[in-house]
Length: 68
Image (cartoon, rainbow, N blue to C red):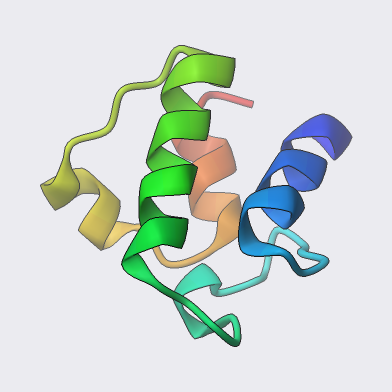
């Protein structure tokens, strides 16, 4: 879990917890969204379509979606 949080913090350029609402992070952008999707697929083998991603709210939701 620690590695996942570190990867998401790198993408979002901010420290995160499982409770972080990633779309509310200062500076949120479509580039960050793309970075999350690429990280999920490349590092965790979890391909997520845009509809599913739109339902995610927190880093914890992403953790759960990856089965971690």
